Length: 320
Image (cartoon, rainbow, N blue to C red):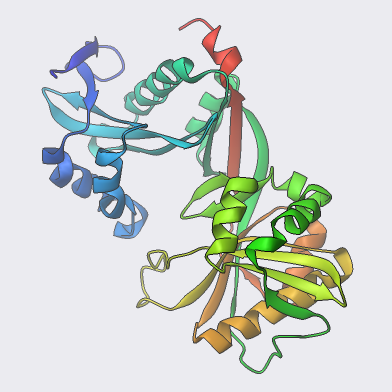
């Protein structure tokens, strides 16, 4: 497929900008852009092949004379759930409207998937994307912050309650706990993994239960908290440090009087597993953050991660 020209002169400068699917031969160009993002720690090189092979999503490039200068990915999370990610622009072409072109192209393509919802996240200092979200009818539905703590093998894994792996047969009990939890609503029913926010509903929960990645915090026979682990180590995101084994939490929730105890017990679990740290992204709820701090967790970045969402049915009826 050749480039489909979008505009000439205008936002991009003197050359016409085209859009086309990303190709296997674009790997070097994508890696060159990724090397200039997050101090070279961008995850795009690790997911490039998977994104190319995705039969349900869209992986698009912005080009000038077929040279890749930007990219974006639309990913199907589950039925009716879509995620926009990987929006990148070559630093040499920033401030020329390339990101806006890619962003609006995803919205145009996403119309075909109504009914459903489209989500994406961005850092709180990304004023351009925050502005675009407002202009295109997205609502900010949640915000998250990154916290972490050193593993502590001296912390008893049972604490004042009992931390135990939940069985697949606990699915209904765990779902009932989540559905009654105010924090679950604050977090927009989302589990975070590798900078994506995934709907933590029956299908995903059943998968994590089957993999032994869901822990319950039990007070006698009462479920007083839930911790859902992510299945694989993420790329180390501390550029000046070697890879460190971590316990990555995708979701953490507990009764108000048990939050700190569960968070501390997870530091003990990490120590027992041989991990060095516990890491998670938690919804910005003051009481939850206070409990994490009481358990020895510290905020890792000053920025917040903003989660945006828009109903695709309204997008389908919107003008281009």
